Image (cartoon, rainbow, N blue to C red; front, top):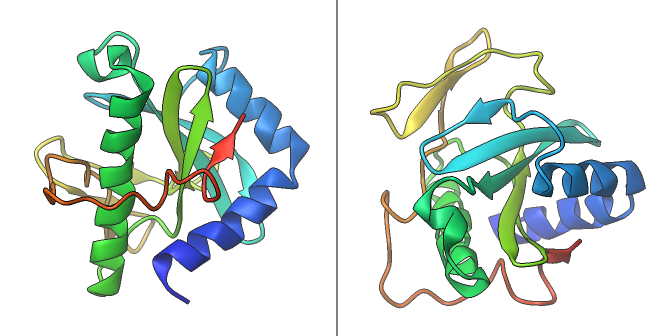
Length: 167
């Protein structure tokens, strides 16, 4: 199963979990606390599906990216998902899924919560594109947005209407 297929399988589970969708709405409205605040995004732990915890990656509204129009936000988040796909195909560890999400005029992605619902340590140096995750300190690529790799001829996949989640 390739990365997009695995992501779409996770999408079905997320859509069937009303509690997760409600928590995602609260994250979009900034009514819950993020577990991680990055340079451009906030990460929210929103629940669990099967054997994976789910995070929502949303642009910070106090940063330039959070003020972009919806189309530009979608494009930037698409880069993250496709970079995860690219690294996954190269046998590098990345969050196990990536699903485009839209709420009003905000774009985001559902992805794996590497903190396992705040239960696992993530060591991430701001100058590195990877984090050390868990007691084994596995190298997992996490800062893989458009600054990591930005193909000029990006074909939209993760933000196609049939592949994304509208909240």
